Length: 423
Image (cartoon, rainbow, N blue to C red; front, side, top):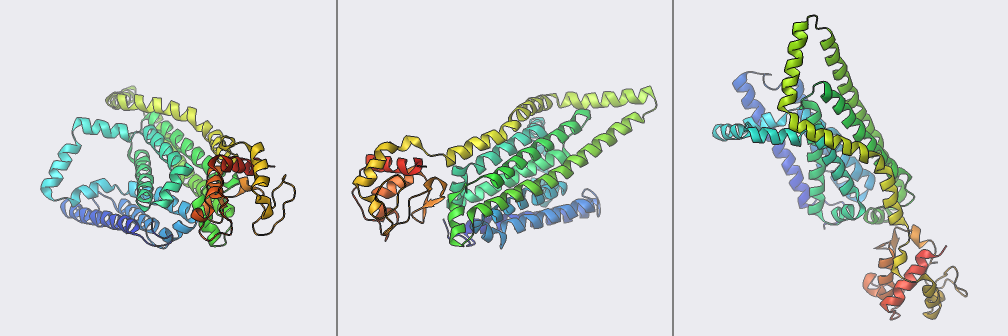
């Protein structure tokens, strides 16, 4: 793990990848327009969208945002929003696959094009990019990477952090591509609106949870905030607002666009004046539905699962928060720990509620440990970490004033249990 706020080799690799993507798009666009004519194949508005998406990708992966994201949870959230709500939808509008195909040499382009048109590949792509399937993929990725142990792992290992960003960007790109370029019939637009609504609800609940959570959820970001004399809880609340409000605005705009397209398609059907034309339209739509029946069946099942799971987002978040903030009562025996505090003489240096005779001489008062995000100035707060520090204070925090009292593992767990359980 490189030092926080330093542009490391993985950051450079991400920026190089974004640069290569932009260069490939430009080469492919030049060849396509030279072959088919200017503004043909890829219209101007699509190219402008692709350029905006590329700039968003570079802004999200490059300095200064990449450097600030190491130090601040709010900046880190802003980096994710830049990748998922700016770069991904604009690149989806820019149709990068077509341009990148034309960036290949002629022989490779022919081979890749032939492979991409194979029935099995087409069917697999339709299943992968079905809006409901992509919705589930995005929700799973968001939930998994915001789970505190996974998020902490990404913060401590640059390579895993790069994988996190790559997964966020790719699932968001698939999500927006499915909404922009997916097949839509009478069912499709309605399903698309519902997909966006579920996504907006999920992101809103997750962002609101960060805002209302009474404790900082990610110890590494909390310690970096404290080193900069920033309130970790305020930083987390700002991150929650960044996830809640911008995502809601962008997704609401997408839902309104889909709804308008849905109404427009319905209006065009209503304008058909003859029974023959209506019949031909119905036959054409039925053919589309039949050709994509398996994908839509899978999407329907996924939709039912998404609808069932979406309302559980807030209760699950609440359970996760209680799991993180609640004392681990399995760590030891708090009643015995209270007696051991006096026996080992901990109250000679610390004021400990419930233990008589305590006076503050060298150490800080041992109160409200369950509310802290760090202990001993640098360790992630947990009963297990506290028990280890009680046994090996000089190992965990070299130079600390706390002496090694030769506390046994059993006794240390009981002492930690009392310190976390006491009122």
